[in-house]
Length: 261
Image (cartoon, rainbow, N blue to C red; front, side, top):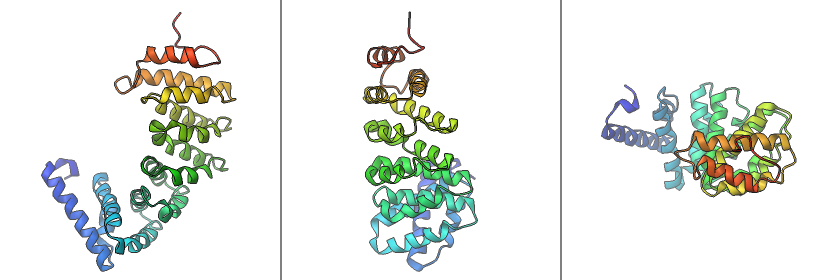
């Protein structure tokens, strides 16, 4: 039976039991329950496991070194789900103490499996929302990496911070505007669209794009921004036509393809 096949109360009891079992493992120097949860087939069970690690790390200073040691062992596991969940657990810690877990992200970026690398992206998003300064500094060092997938993953990982503080990530994204890899450029356009429909963000994004040199990429980004305001119309701060009007007035290089006659 899956996690969400249970009632709300049953799920709470299971989460509490996971937390207790993991705490006991850490206290007694064992890892059997942690491994069971980190490798579980149900993603929500794994989530309960890595969130428990984050809560215990925050609450019990005496167990912090043990937690980091255990995660350091797990990141070398042959089990993909264990490595993936280890990165997610490191992300819980990194929301307040990134320097302690930096090494896990340096390693996870280059993992052979996409689910582990995706966990790096997801963790970047949540850490960037809570603890942006060290995350952005760390991300910046990989923007010119020779591996195109590293550049793409870093770009994608900046997205969530950009939805609330676009001014923080736009200078970093600008470094990718002339990237030679289409997949990286497509991700850049996607991220620009994802941050521009949030309240107060369109203005900041358009102002920044006016200063970018790659006209072709900027035009693609403008098209994506207009389109996103329709695709996410139930969540966008502006209606699509309002966004178009704003862009027509403030985008200095021409009209959008969505312009009305």
